[in-house]
Length: 293
Image (cartoon, rainbow, N blue to C red; front, side, top):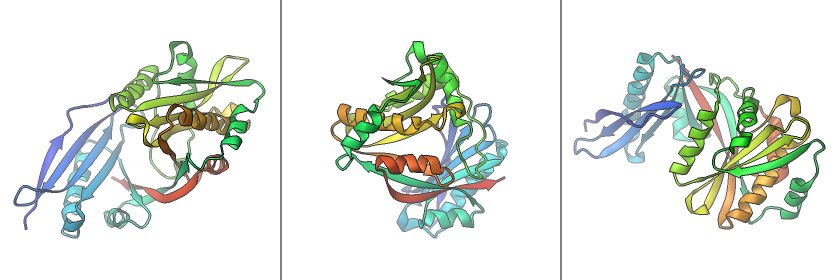
């Protein structure tokens, strides 16, 4: 049965990317698959595109995914991209599909979950309440308060050396506009962004942060975004301290939450140890795969 591939364009360009999309439909016009290509638009990442291909299980092995992939890769080349990345779970059909399409494994990620009903609250309370000489914690919901904005922007460079394996990820350049846009995007989706930050008492500057996004309604599982500490302030247990405080705050503010989700690169053993200490348990492994154009 012939399949039609229709190119679509997402009209909502964000401050950091724009999207292209393709819909695969059968002779009756019923959708059987889709692909989306995120084209990063900010300095430091204009070489990169992120791909997602989905085909209905009943329609697989009919070259639909191959045609969608070809359309997306051609568009990435036409736009001058040098790398396309996509993620697939270990053991999934998607991993074999990407490998057959020329992608290579560039980063291994371990996903983990903290079941809030099973969390060791006394241990977390002790971790969050333990003093850290020369530092204090602060927290906020939504976008960063104006009085903390300047040093929070500076602290974002703590993500610059985040272990990314062999992924050609480039450099994410954070400024206040981008930080506010990210917070606004979370709010627009009906979700809540909660940030805990570590402050150096001597300079009153933010030197580390952890972010947690809670789904609308405060039910289900919340998702950790970035957690990072500036290089010159590492080795003091700040990441574990901040995450413990974030866990307790999430449980108190959203008692219907089921758990917290996180992912960590396998070449980031420090953050793996932090998550293990806090009680996160691995759920699955996924791979960032990359196609070099």
